Length: 155
Image (tube, rainbow, N blue to C red; front, side, top):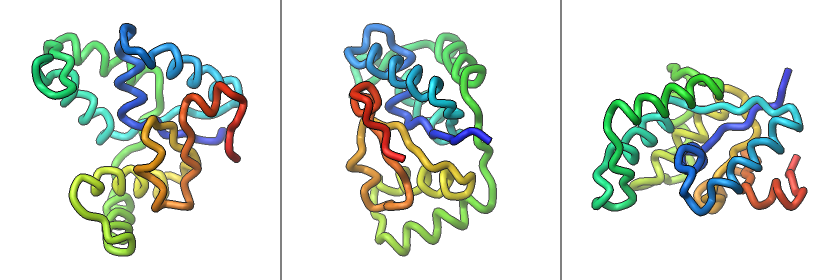
């Protein structure tokens, strides 16, 4: 069985915008993971967050200003390229346990849900641009694209 790596929303977003300054870095890091036989995965929460940013007006904070049709096309591409890890009662139960045991508050609840999904689906690695958001979860191997490109893949 392949080792699984979950892609954080910020990775999926950068991959969908060729003019993003981090596009090449993210794309190259995914090639490294595939070459090392990682199964690249996403969860529905990340696709929902992706949809939010894509359809938010460009004048708004971090919005891409895309139409629903363009966003749908990009979402379908993500669904074709990567493996969806489905939601379940187990994810909910893991999330409830994590938010209490780690005293999670505010927007951090979304990162806790990513950690819960990883735990429920036995996913060991997370590719993200925000490593610090996941330091409270020592069971997750958090990797940034630049680390992969420098040859540093934590096991």
